[in-house]
Image (cartoon, rainbow, N blue to C red; front, side, top):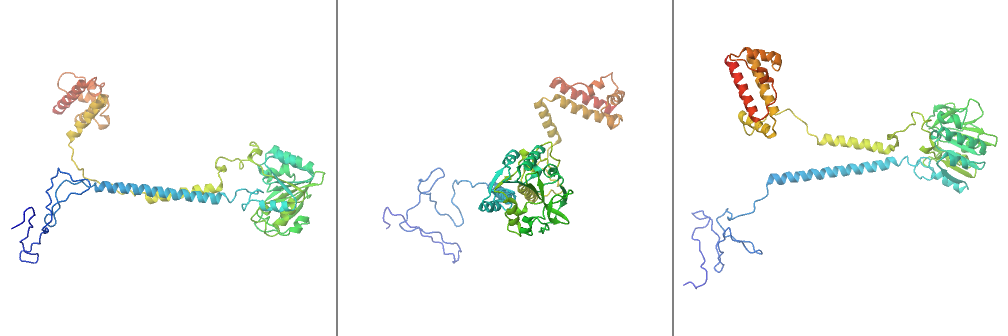
Length: 462
């Protein structure tokens, strides 16, 4: 007897998998295991408990509504699009970082050229500090008015870029130098500025880029010895009143000219390399720079700006445009960015191969295409366009029927007489029918189509 209120354990009587039947055993339920109640599709389970399904035969899944998985092509396309956007942003970030680094490295190399406050390789802070230790005060000015006002017998005036000065500014500096009795040093002047600042001195081209010997009796040059003055201009003094030093191929790169009657002088230097931080310690550059700049207790370091140049007096080579205001480092950076963008475009571009004809997924009948176009004309109320198409097609067919050349099919003088000659009925306005005005309404457009069909039928059967 089976005790009441206890589930009966089901026993599978089928043989084992290795038996004669070859049917695998079904799962057996323990004697005291509760019987799972059958679930229906419209019955939900408790929120905290997943629904249980009775096990079925091997390899089968429980039936019931399940959430449809997302479309695989859509998920793949979305992932591919996100990956493409991420790769593009990474590429742009790398390019921007590279451009910023290159611009910072390249633009800084020429920053502060001959500036006594700059510690860059092309600055002149080192010589300024050495002069300060020797009791020489350095004052930086940026206008010709300030430079002229600061000149005197105890002052050395250094002009870093004489060619940038306008005519008025050059004359002001020249008058101040003649009357001051001090020393004026011009770095790299050309024939553009020598006329006012050092009359009689002429340029003789560029010097050989090498270290030169003094080859003169100027005390500062003989004491300093060899110096780096071979990377600038060469000069000549036809009057023979200047002391010429550091010759390159027979022409000096340093001239010392007496100015005025107060004992002052003007030094013309073909290059300012002896004042730069990067070359101050080479050969006798430091000695020559300190003797030229430290002969007086006060040094006025004049760095001309664009405000000191006269627009009318500047040569064509000196007239700068917007591109001239861009530092050299940024120009190289923009060029490298352009090359990188071109390489990226070539990398990502897709080659266009030959045209491939593909079968249309659906064959469209000519009548359906005609009806579709007609509906579009009707929706847009384009009766003029529809009438033009009908008449043009009719004229081409009538020209072929009447023997009119294809090039004259749309000429009323050639087509209308030929069509009228083939008509057997009464007189008709062939010209108005084939070349007439636009129909006023849809009914008139339909009538026009009927008249064109009738005209073509009559010509065809004549």
